[in-house]
Length: 565
View 1 (cartoon, rainbow, N blue to C red):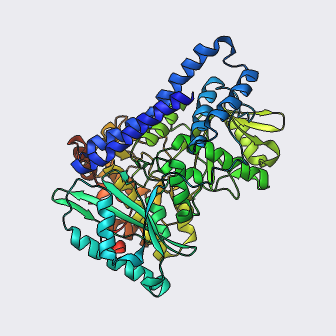
View 2: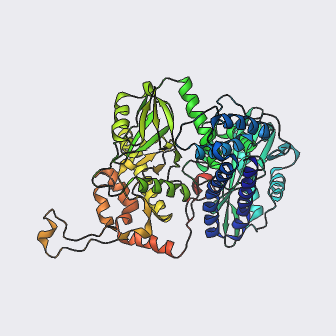
View 3: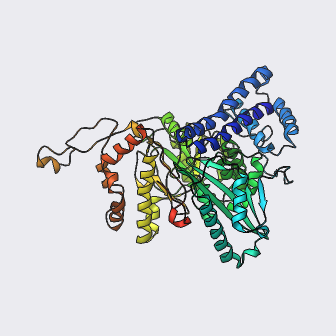
């Protein structure tokens, strides 16, 4: 099992290293394919290892006494490894496949809430340190950029370096008064690649105070530009958002990389950070530790998540935990002409697809247990009645055989009731941006009702209800034909027929945004969303193999950057 993980990790890192060459060659389609292939690699190795373990253990492959011994031996094998926790997650993944119909068992799995990651200094730090007092900023940044060994050409490297230096001087003076007050600048030696962007990540340090710094790079046909300098923790958080695809970042020690990033984004859970750098399966193990640690030190109730109840999922949450749990109902509403597997497939599609900052990352779990006494009566009744094929009581526990987790968001319909008109206008415009950007990513949400979108703490609109989601080429976008005579227009009955995959964007106007100032603001920016032409143009874009740019920052805000080309 250890050796199989090592083999996986070698291949995982080899794939990740290809991202630099892909960025240098502007091979964007190849980059998308690489991201998808890398996501599937872990599953392949876990399945292979499961088969090998069965072959070795024969009839004892599900003998718990054997696995208690094996867990101790495995712990010895990885005890001194800096990536030990990640290797243990691989062990857990194989074990969960072998004991697929059973809950978490701390005797044979690595779910140790008290364990701390090695705190010793690594042999090779994940960053390089630069002392700001040693030279002027322009010289230092020239040295920093050379240290990455980039093979591509910059459009205006000297100008970019000058702008970086000026931005840092301004930031430091605003924060500390004088540039001389700053001790050092640490830059992670690995580049963070995603989609069409590359990011250099580091921090400026004065004593115990750390200012994050992120530089986005964009590769145009005539060269690369350094597209901005981000210092705000909110801006950095959006770059590492749970609504973005995972980075391809070649880190020798992922654990040490997370140690570097964590102080720069203290509000983010470790599980989110591990997912953001591509270790999503280890992220699931870390999340379980976070969840059960919260349950052990709190007494908040498990209740229905805020918002209108859906026809496909029962959604519950813990009052003081920033995650929702989504369980598929046994039966759906009459308008939902699909089954359970379709819903699972839609969520897995989102996992594999580019989320472009507009789709919430969802993690899939099996056989989680919750204390029955902590579940509100209403939620318990709904789970046991509406999800009886998935949920059952075992002693003082409620066992959920299958669920998805997502970050808790404020449903857009509720958000609009909570804010003033000006803020409402901003968010409905971003709602239109979300729909537009999903279309540019080849995604049709299906159900465009406000209740299926949520608002992040940064005020960004995100889609989170995936049961009707599909690719654009699966939809036939049509214009409503004119009535044959005026009476048809006022009859209350549709005068045109529609096939199963037909969609009439003109109909969106009736429900996407309520009438009044909010709708006026929406129409000013997004009236074309109500035309079949917009959607057909997007279909043509994807048919021609074009890859649209999605960057998690705004040009005006960061002075050099841009959001979507």
